[in-house]
Image 1 (tube, rainbow, N blue to C red):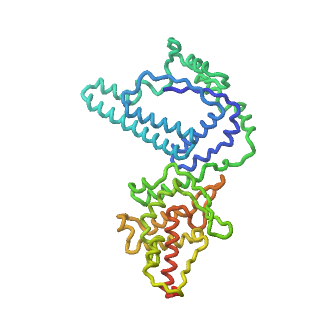
Image 2 (cartoon, rainbow, N blue to C red):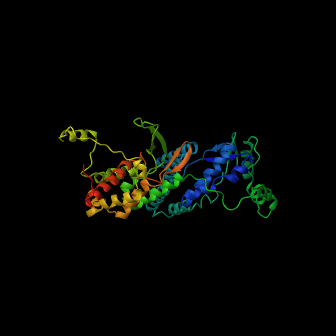
Image 3 (cartoon, one colour):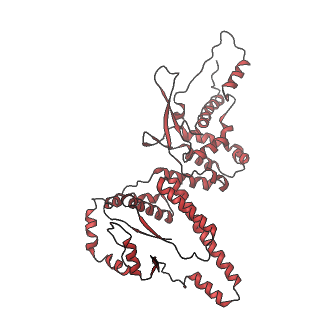
Length: 416
């Protein structure tokens, strides 16, 4: 299917100048960079002049074209429309994955078709040469432009007349689709009058424009790279979050306080590192307790019933102020990693083959520099662990248990 589009050119100059072209450099693959530029460019065009499209159905599909391939192409196009409407980074990621699948599908389908045809016609030189011409596109040539157009029952074959028919479908069009030889003569870079006035309209800028791509994309890419490098593919594929959302901050009132006080909660469900943090919490939870830890209030009540309490005894409860945000993250990660690799417990328990440094790296990307937004402003947590992260309670417990264990080892644990 051929799409021919005409658009007015006015009103777009400034948007093209200030567009976030550097957003593409968050990706490393050349295809992804080009796709991002293509999406930005089309977004500007859609804003100023929605495309008017004329569709021409091809007479026939290639010989190797299959129904399964057609279904994959439809799925890819559906994801593209969804991504353009939502502008969600996750939707763009799904579209690019589908695009890569279709490209691979086409290559494999063509390869399988021509291989089978060559095997079947190995002893028939005439058919074999025909296959070779199809494979090299000699029968059709390298020019894939529209060769004919059916306009109200009349077949038009001349290039210039086809171009004129396409131009006639445009309403209020400023830029016409030129006939190819005229087009190249008009855009010759030797004629400076064509583009000098555009350069003079540019604002006084130096270097590349500032990067406007969302840092969440960079966080997603960094986490995916680390997880896929350290963990087996079967596990890594489950832990890499596609189309993540920003964590957001909200507060709950502390009703037991005499004065107004709020407890900050960072809702991180669906964030870029949530799945990895939850997986690490499940694996490392056995290391977050000691002989002085009680699982819940019910266990605490049961233990109290077994203790003989006299009338002179006093029950005292201590509260650590702002515990989560005061947890030293690097120190706690070191303690947790040392415990996990004592006698290589972590690898033996979960049938893995990683190092202590690898576990530290996974914990760091799960807990440090968490992105979140509050009242429309983007923030990055730089102190402590977040209350709302799956690893928050575990890190706090490990830190407190480590203090108790050090006091016991130094024979300084207070008794009452």
